[in-house]
Amino acid sequence: MSTPEIQSALQQIQQMATQAAGGRGQQLSTVVGGGGFAGELHASLQRINQLQARSSRQAEAFQAGAPDVALHDVMVDMQKASVAFQMGVQVRNRLVSAYKDVMNMQV
Image 1 (cartoon, rainbow, N blue to C red):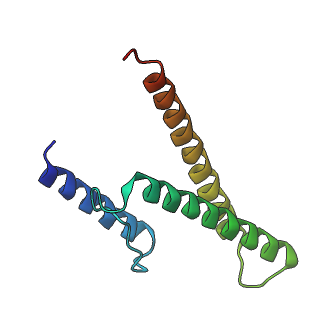
Image 2: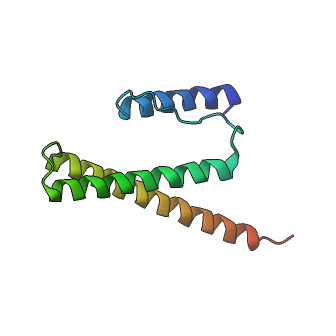
């Protein structure tokens, strides 16, 4: 895949993510080589943390009987946080596996 094709694919992913976010204008950083791997990893971990915190707040508000919090919203937020966390764990597992592979290479 060439760089223009990658950029095009990333733009499509960004558009879908914006639509999934409800069009709130949330932008994802999709510039190749722009923020570096560590920056992207940090941003992803922050996003997972935000999803988990929102899920916890929604659950606590529902338990407290807040009238503007519906059960289906709480369940959807909990599932989003769960899927994001599982994805983070899988990325970590892949990174550890790649690190082990690199460390076991003969020089």
